[in-house]
Picture 1 (cartoon, rainbow, N blue to C red):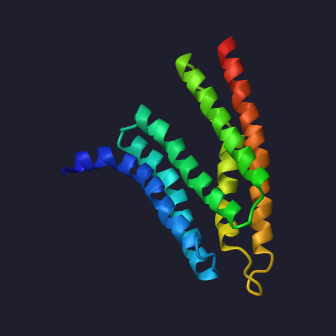
Picture 2 (picture 1 turned 45 degrees about the horizontal axis):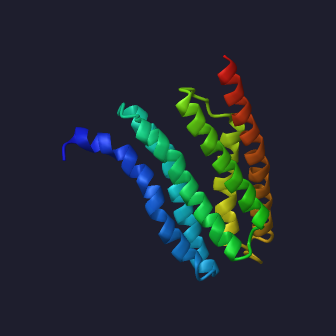
Picture 3 (picture 1 turned 30 degrees about the vertical axis):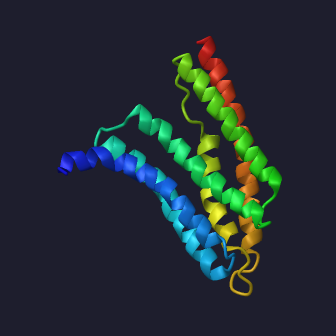
Amino acid sequence: MTATEFQKKLPMRITLSRIFMVPIIVAFMWPNTLFWNIFAAVCFILASITDYYDGYYARKFDVVSNFGKFMDPIADKILVTSVLAMLLAQGKIDAWMVIIILARDNFIGGIRSVAAADQIIIAAKPAGKWKTAMQMVAIPIVIIGNMDPYLPYLDKIGYGVLWVSVILSITSGIEYYLGYLKSRKA
């Protein structure tokens, strides 16, 4: 493989790595012990970091594609929703959190489909970026859980930050919808 071929394929491989990390993260979460939860949290953090680098290298190597633009948020959602489902099964988070996050993501996915059919591009909103950032901070903290006596209340801090991301999910969903409506009128 030449350097140019490598550069062309690198961003998509980084995106797909996020999806391939999901079974590893979930497997590490399964025993639900501090030791394995730390491994799961580290893997989640590494997978989250790839969200920056796939776009960075796509722009750097000038290989931005519609498929990449489509797959990037899909990979994010597979990563986040899989881990949230596992956290829900472990009783570490509330069902309402997962319901709101999934409903927002499906809603935005529907708006994106309609916008694409109307050939409308809606820019990402700050609330959506903050939502993602809050999730990427909160989820590994919630995965690790309670670390008494080392870091008391760590699990509660992560839980609270995750609720902040839920509120931002609602806010960004509304912003995205209003952005679509505004773009249709323009």
